[in-house]
Image (tube, rainbow over all chains, first blue to last red; front, side, top):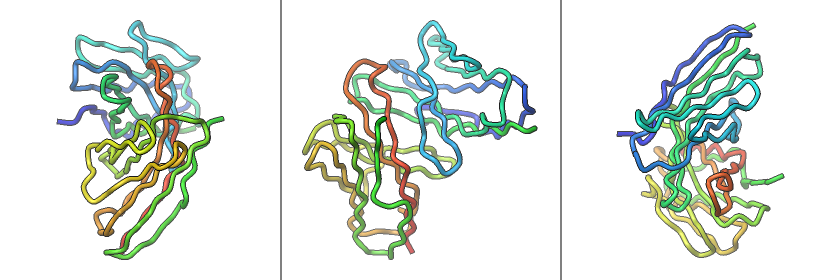
Amino acid sequence: RKEVEQDPGPFNVPEGATVAFNCTYSNSASQSFFWYRQDCRKEPKLLMSVYSSGNEDGRFTAQLNRASQYISLLIRDSKLSDSATYLCVVDLIYNFNKFYFGSGTKLNVKP
Amino acid sequence: DVKVTQSSRYLVKRTGEKVFLECVQDMDHENMFWYRQDPGLGLRLIYFSYDVKMKEKGDIPEGYSVSREKKERFSLILESASTNQTSMYLCASSATGGPLAREQFFGPGTRLTVL
């Protein structure tokens, strides 16, 4: 079983739409959670950390549900520039900063 | 800005060749990582290092070795390249600290093709 599972998509949405991605993780001892963004043929970059109480950064909102072991990312008012692959990342703190990456969800925002 | 550089963007090698992939970071990070990324499989950890001369196996270490002689440099070695090692290789580094300090910064990647 994979540590982190994501719907690969693609999610095809028009500009201005709201879109949400979910990600499930298997290890209940997971401590930290992140969303990374990866543009085509580029390296992954941190989009935002996910806090227990949920957090927002502009048009992006991240939520954590420990009981059901999933995290979510909500993007409001989608822009063309949001087109990318979004990677869910889970960190087992006791394991030497080792991250587990989901295989990513591809988002295409169309005009 | 953190900068992680990798020695090559594209590399073509023949089966059986010894391959060296180099990674250098300029932020004095303790931790360095080597991943491979394949379609549908995401990033998979090959090896990581949390200090000079220290290394730990990741999830798929078979066929690979690593070297970390200096804090800023982490090398991935394919002792005898095989076609199933054709992939995108990504190096990353991170500091040691609380959750928010452990962001991993990635290099641009090396696309390796083994013929």
